[in-house]
Length: 120
Image (cartoon, rainbow, N blue to C red; front, side):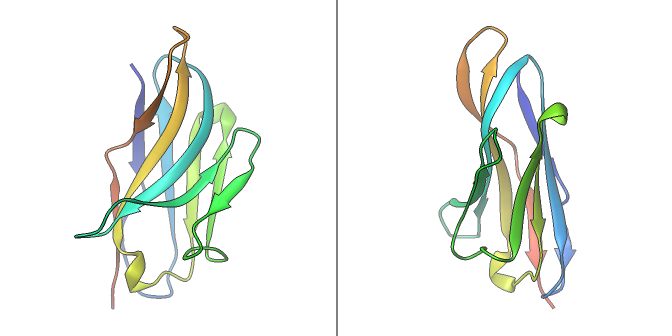
């Protein structure tokens, strides 16, 4: 069984920084694209950033220049460095990954989310 576990969510003032982490564990053969999504209260879940296995990245326009996604393939972990945080960044942040298990079966996995609150 494969699991994604996020950490790093917290309460931070506007202009502050946070670093989110997401570790994948279980019967993993290979992890392809990993990403972060977020869902604010009353809003739909939206893409924040994705990163391929070869570290090609893609960002939502709203976070370009402020957020950086990275990954450590040896640790099966993806990170999201968030700088210059704004109140509108407040949301539950979810980790996403396309994982091929040792069984050869591939599917998309989601973490349970970590809350980021940006407020003065």
